[in-house]
Length: 74
Image (cartoon, rainbow, N blue to C red; front, side, top):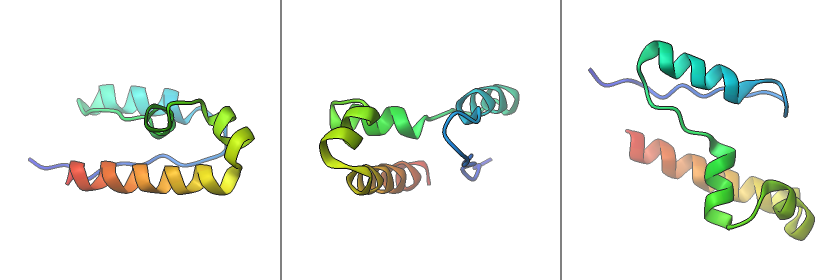
């Protein structure tokens, strides 16, 4: 059975990663952390991306990573 992706959104520090990990475990599904993927691709932390290039650049990287992850999951 093919599953549709589930995305959790909300403010920073609201517990999305913790809830996502538990939900994935309960549903026996894979969990991806978009922030971790952005950091991996950029080779720097999100804080460093904000400091070096600003929020707009972070949002660009975030959008590209999300799009790639969703396309690869389909």
